Length: 152
Image (cartoon, rainbow, N blue to C red; front, side, top):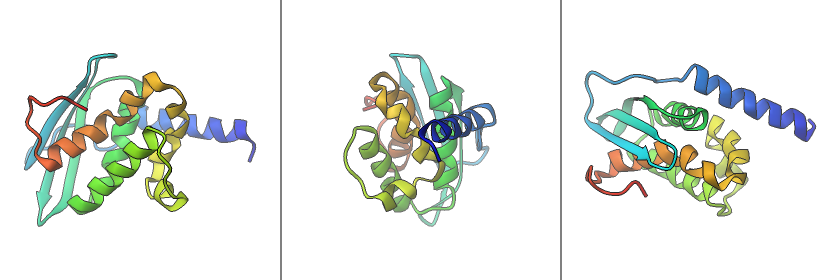
């Protein structure tokens, strides 16, 4: 597959998640929640998570933001639903490393599912916070960071 066709496929996946976000909304019953905000572009994401026996039984997000932040949140919620807290934190670490250019194995990258298509976004430093916002929120909600703490 040519590089142009691959980039077009990546764009299509990102647009699909942004236009039809998975797990969009707010859970009625949740055990963990947080709101994260990107002041540089105005993206705001509110996550609600229902944990049971150390497993993410359900997760949802709502908020406003650009195509990239909404698509990334959709991809993240799809990936972590049904996973243990430890697995979700591991995915978040892989994604965060990936976002800042740290080397990860091909297997790690593929474990991110649809979120691996955001690799092209990482070429634009101003968009990294957009792509990582929901993942920071996941860490914050699962690791119990206080609401007043900084996003990064």
